Length: 131
Image 1 (cartoon, rainbow, N blue to C red):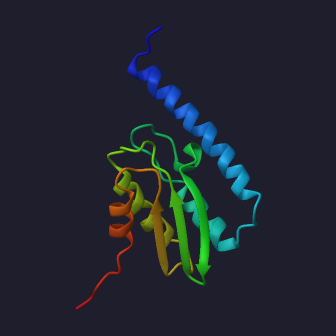
Image 2 (tube, one colour; image 1 turned 180 degrees about the horizontal axis):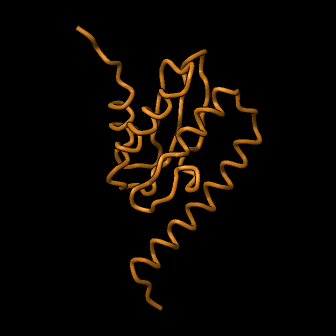
């Protein structure tokens, strides 16, 4: 039995969805989110993957949102594949979206499961220098 590219993409996305849904349910049961964490999660989950047309919430890309200290949120996400060509764009979009939430002064975004996650994380979270 052979699968075409569309079948393969559907199977890959379905498996990824089931895995992330299970993982998110486990993580969500460990602690209650603060109001700010809920608002940040809701905001970043509105983002849309241009390849699939699905929101980040529908795809369960966002794996955790944690307010580390007042005004500072940490957001973890897993891109759609280890070689996702727009993972850096996803990270920047997540950061910009989180910064729109009232009370968020700093958003730290961490990509996981990508071949270039270290570079993405370092670049997205570097401190902006002003002259």
